Amino acid sequence: MSTKEFVCIICPRSCHLRVDESGNVSGNSCPRGATYGRQETFDPRRTLTTTVKVSGGTMTRCPVRSDSGVPRDKQKEISLFLKTIKINAPIKLGDVVYDKPLGIDCKIIATRDIEVKK
Image (cartoon, rainbow, N blue to C red; front, side, top):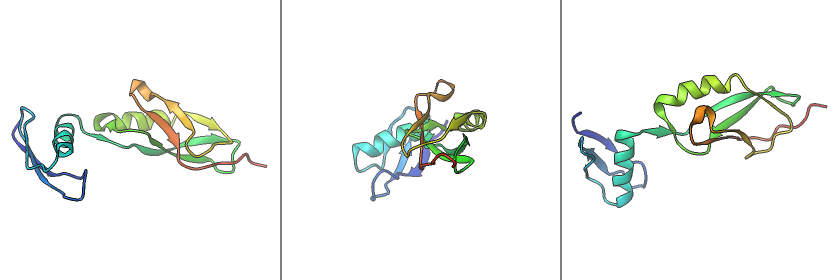
């Protein structure tokens, strides 16, 4: 692995980071940039957003997201898994829809209220 270069997105400074294969970071103006650079190089994570099926609600699908970063290489696998589950209305914004999908340490939370269908 050679040196990776990218722009830090943690603060408005947008430092140009360089991270070598040993995890040494240069170009950062703050310690948070160094932490971000190492994470982005060795264990990149992203917030997962998708929808899940709803039973008995005013909508047939509920938008959800992960409460923390999910490893990028697991996002598709988790998304496919979430397609297989169904939750029951009512659902409130912030409700935990699923805890630790496929053993990944995160919670899947609802991002909208869905009422019971009348």
